[in-house]
Image (cartoon, rainbow, N blue to C red):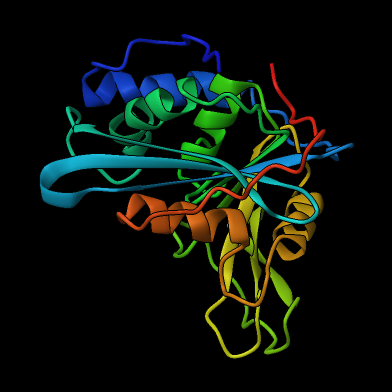
Amino acid sequence: MEIQQLHPWNLEPRDAIATQKRLASQIVLEGSPQDVLTVAGVDIATPSGRGRGAVVVLSYPDLRVLESQVVETELTFPYIPGLLAFREVPVLAEAFQRLSVRPDLLLVDGQGLAHQRRFGIACHLGLLLDLPTIGCAKSRLVGEHAPVGEEAGSRVELRDGPEVIGLVVRTRAGVTPVYVSVGHRIGLAEAAEWVLRLCRGYRLPEPARLAHQAAGGQAVAVAPQPAGEQMSLF
């Protein structure tokens, strides 16, 4: 899968911040993905200072695993909150380059617009891949919100001052909500609906849950492809 070369990765932190500010204006904050047949989940783990990035592609709507790619390599950028994309995306980029199935929608375990410079890792990946992309984070980076209702599907706005930067969504009753924000080429309401649509009884949507497992070193079984079925290839 091709990845656009928007900038070098070996930047000083101040230059990385300037790059985020420059690229943030290119993010498309609306859209409703149509004819979605494949959905990818993305996550990364950092065991012993190395990065293990995972991309898992599922069919939609049945959510069978079509492909899983895991790459482990050294991390060269320091850990700096707000600049994690510069540490993690080079690992994930290699995993994407190995994919033979092009996803129609991307779900990233991390922030999109809900970032201090409105350019989290989901925005970075969405722009690099030119794909509709959703940030679905397990914790909050910036912003404030009211309490979320206890029922599955309940949501409240995540605000940074007067600006709505995401939605806090309860995906399952009795579990901690997730933080949903736009990555690229999708609206916020549509992003939240997709997150709920992709849940299968767990806190995390299925693509993100399986990517989290793969990044953590667990095997993700690829489902046998029915005879005659065509995958969404390049």
